[in-house]
Length: 439
Image (spheres, rainbow, N blue to C red):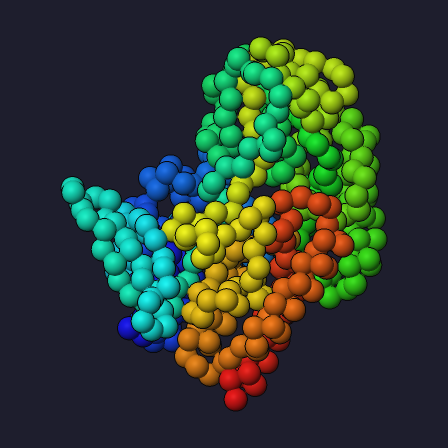
């Protein structure tokens, strides 16, 4: 029963599998779809992924790649999802992982074993007619199922009734259906910016509505990818980083208000930035009009919090995702209000052998973080590393959550936020300390 279960074969699941295989730890991977890649697999038949046709990474190639397997040097600075998917497929082929993944298999439940340490994992094969659920026991479970698959809608719902077409960005693929229509996009995250720009090219009118403004970061700053100096900058105090980033952004694109975009009331690095080189020009040229948040619906009329109103045919919610785990009983583990209490964002202090890979929202790329998380988990599984007491783990979680609450604007988007390079250093320190915990 000394075997690990990895849930999901997206970018976090495949690196977890590679690390476990490298360490000689026996494991199974269960993937609900028929391909690897998760959100990066366009048209994924898992029914959960949300890539749209124009999607590109928001962190540059050298920041995103795994340490164990570099991206091809002929890739552009910001690869598209087809290139990222091919990179993942090459990764799986390089490390001979495909035969370790059971595809088209849904994880129905994960429950603590009744008579010994470990977990009973119940799965169902989706491609077998009349397949019955099968339960297997594992000593360790690595949850790598991601957190961008369960769409979050405004809470409470916006008052009134809208009589046009409504969809979430999760279901958006291409903009052709918006041609000639009046479109309202709600949300100023990366998806909201991308969709608003695409709608602005084909729609009769495009409104981008937002509760609060955002710092718009162009993909290139002074001729280099915007995150080219992120590793070095991350070693500076946050206040110094904010001052430098503010100056650099001003030189790169001026004040966003000069483009007719509302100036953010929060400082840089107090909210997740929005990466776009096209949004501000689209606003300046009139392809996209910016409004405050939606106050209510009235048929085809959308009323905004500033008292203005627009007639619309389509409303697209770019309002993020809920963190949910359908295979857990809520009394066992849940993320109420997107709050996840994990030691160093990986270890559940209350359930021995339960780990989460990639359950972070980084200022940076998630792939190297998931890779190093997997190495730490492998250390713990092998027994050469240990953990502090439960009380000490809970104290670390409280300290981290308090720090995040002080730094970031209040939002369910920021409950799992980390600075990528600072977090990598944090994990490396913990791996060193873990050797002492085991002694």
